[in-house]
Length: 177
Image 1 (spheres, rainbow, N blue to C red):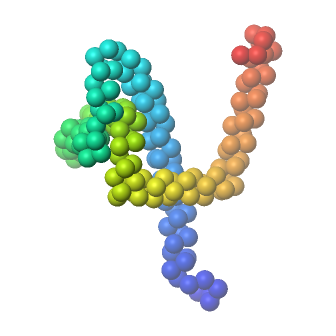
Image 2: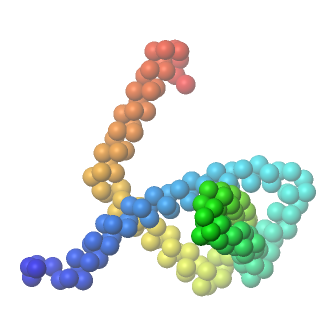
Image 3: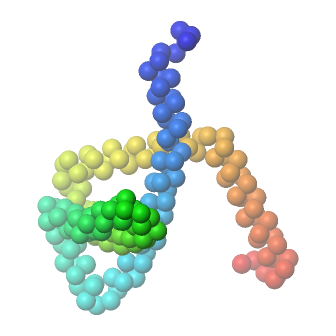
């Protein structure tokens, strides 16, 4: 080993390289599901009885909002544990389905409740600090991944493919859609 770099830094770089990309992909997928479920739940929130409930949730004081925020995860935890049990007992497909459905349903409710209670939640000091730390960490992770040459090549290929599809569409069907 050379004296150029201490072992601690080598391990940190190795850990960062091995886990940053899968972690970023997981977070990207989480955010994608979050955004899609938030849009769906906003649509559901237009129904009069749901709108009334959402209005009441949005008015909650900070710690009541925190309880409302925690409820979806607490309700769905047994389903996620059941999914793990199913997988552990040889029912991998069923367990995976239970887990995915619980994850999507939980994310839908969590996203909507967070959007309704975020102003109240951010008035809780420790919650606000945790939110800022997690958001800053996520942005650093994304910046690291965006700086990777492989990411830049994939983005360039995706842009080229998108332009090619648009060009094909115009040539085939006319107009710019």
